[in-house]
Amino acid sequence: MKVIHYMMAIGLFAMVACSVNQPVNHPQYFEKPEEAVKKAQSDLLEAMKVGKNEFNFGIDPRELKEAQIGPMIQNYELNFDALLKADQTVALSELVDKVKNQLVPLHIQNRVITVVELKKQEKGWIITGFSSLGIAEELNYILQPVKNLVNVQIRKIEVPNLNVNIYEVQINGEILLFTNYNNVFSLNKPITSEQLMPILKEEAYRFNKEFGKTLKKEKLVY
Image (cartoon, rainbow, N blue to C red; front, side, top):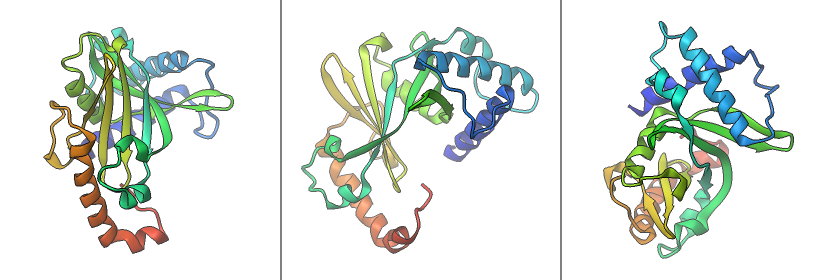
């Protein structure tokens, strides 16, 4: 299923890139992130219209047209080396490394339709693509109890090499963690850093034991 989502995201991004007729190395810059998201939304609608007989985007164009812009999600990457060295009692937030990009959900009635990926550069904001439909599905699981997305702050954390997405959700001052990694945890139920860290440590150690030498020579795809 993840492979299907990934391939759909590639096809979807390619269609949008063609629709705006922009070389990848000459991106369009926007002063505000909202402007970039609206442009991505418009371009995606056009791409869906052009490619409706060739691609199954998995998105209802009528809903996409009406979708509203949700709160920006900072997408971080965990420091894998720090994870290997860390004690199990260390909080997950202390291992967060750099911001990869920003994710902006497009939603209708608090249901996420798709997620636009942006990056902030010196000249302004650029559109880098769309997340896989799997990300939208994961967000919908997490946000089911939430009545208003405006009141929610979300941080997404990717763990290199383990293919793990962890969501740090702040609601009414309370911080909750969600992940469905390896089906050990469920996106329907929040967990603590203390519950998650031993599992991540064990999996990171196992990965490093098997692929560590190769990883030093070249970065693996995950």
